[in-house]
Length: 251
Length: 285
Ligand SMILES: Nc1ncnc2c1ncn2[C@@H]1O[C@H](COP(=O)(O)OP(=O)(O)O)[C@@H](O)[C@H]1O
Ligand SMILES: [Mg+2]
Image (cartoon, rainbow over all chains, first blue to last red; front, top):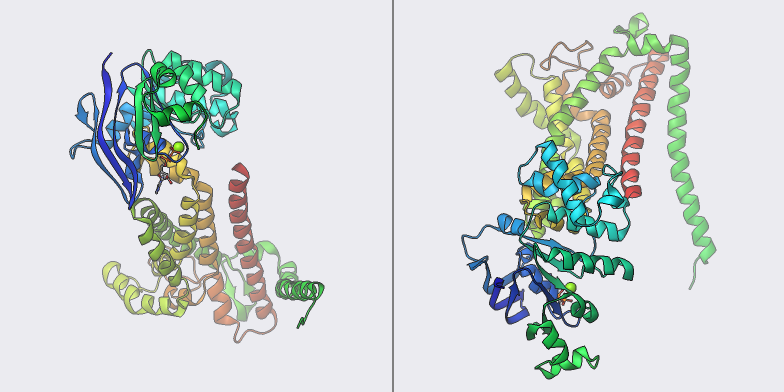
């Protein structure tokens, strides 16, 4: 197993606010890496650094390096749009476009300039199957995506990502809007997806991190307090603060 | 000291609101009661579709004015809508938010410039320019369309900006996260999501263009004839009323009120369509 992403000495400022402090960690290829920690500690911020979504926030400054396959994505000559095709993101709240189910799935392909109808249809089916959504929506591909139940919307967001065949999938609390059964489905889906993709997930649910992830990072106030194999982080934490958090003595 | 109780204030406000509404209703009623009997007598077909407008001879066909109004309005939309929507998109999606927040009120201020001023610029600058470039009288359908196109810009821009701002940021993020460029995101997600608000802005602008009088009188030339080209002098429905109401009497006066009825119906229809478009969008969310 090799590192797909290497984060070194990453600092991030929102204006004057120091949101990430000298963070270093790695995201292993074909693994699931979880970021845990109390809310506001910078998990989403760190995740959004991996596909440069923070570029959209005015006044946000980043220093340090994030290497994808050994190349710094913050290098001056790095191309953001092509980076985001390789590193896709599923958001906390399902955010399908106000388009049909089909148009949502093929959106990324159209953006990439593909308009061949048959190829689009094939990719749509493959992606929806990949997100375990095909059977539920195959008869309503032209229905508005916003009419689907929330968990199907979230899997649609996964499907629309799979369509562009990213290398890395970032998930920011993908289950926080879902009920336990839908959550379980997404978790199983992640375990299936990690065979072909590299996954990084933010969760405030420690059971979830323990269940699905191979590596875990515990963050506190913008710092990476502890990072290692999930098994070890959860059973033999090296840091007292991690232990307090996972045993529920935090705060 | 309490001047009014809660109930008193409520009654006062109800009274004010009611009198405002009834004033509008009375105006509408007045126009219709003056205009409708004429239409009944003269015949709707003859009134709307005859091209002879000769008040002295008792002929009241407003077809040329209807056609002129239509063309002038369409021309104004053809010029103002693309510019306005493009401006709104540029300001919201490509400019830093503080810049947009500073520019938007400035643009809205343009709506407050008296239309005489626009007309004045049209007469002094635009008409001579058209005359020397394309020929014709200068005061023309084209001049009226351009001036109106500029006059509706604040309406289109301001309401379109509101519509585009109302598009959830999560749509943009979703699109960018799939590797789309800002421009692709605008074209494929943001503008389609704001479509109904943008359409509403254009329809409201149409209402303004149909109803605008002073600037049009000044630049359109006001000849009562079917326009053969954009360079011809035309007279719109509003211009017709404003130009002749001063001296019209009897049937002639009634015919002008009937023209007002036609305008009233058109503008009301446009506003209702705009309202529907806006409400439809609210319902979809
Ligand atoms: N756009 C922003 N501007 C300023 N501060 C922000 C912004 N987004 C997040 N923050 C701050 O950065 C810190 C980390 O936020 P976030 O990464 O969302 O935490 P988490 O995902 O762990 O709950 C918080 O203190 C939050 O208030
Ligand atoms: Mg978060």
